[in-house]
Image 1 (cartoon, rainbow, N blue to C red):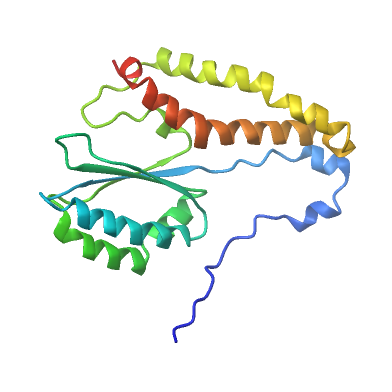
Image 2 (image 1 turned 120 degrees about the vertical axis):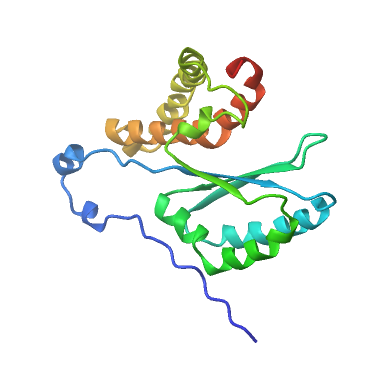
Length: 211
């Protein structure tokens, strides 16, 4: 029976922080988590949709086993189209490349090729630029619209997200530390923006954003 070995992962901890003084910790820069989104487009041959859906059911759980995987979204074709758009999120460019260059993905891609009407298209976007990435044929979003939409999301978050931390600090005094609290608030806001709010909002207001 073939044994399964868990995928190796990167340990993000810094043990030196355990013995660091308050002054040393205060002097450190804030962590800068990297966000990488890979956009993959597959245009299918006629009558290949059923086979492609079966292929997706196989490849998605395989990708999820790779270190740094942060989620996948599948945008299925509009009526009359055969274009699937798949977005994969990783915590770093290195982890993204580990998946894309892996033998497992190459084997699955070889199975996919007979279903495609043209070669796979792939873009790897780092940081937050994926928020305002137009679909093929769309004009880029104007900068003032990017500014207004981002402001409209960040402003209420900066008011609402700190509230539970202020309440929790009454029970857990360590949360009252200004640096710790600001770091946690910033992490929650960036996480909500990147993984929850902006991907959905940019789709909901796409007509205005790219019009």
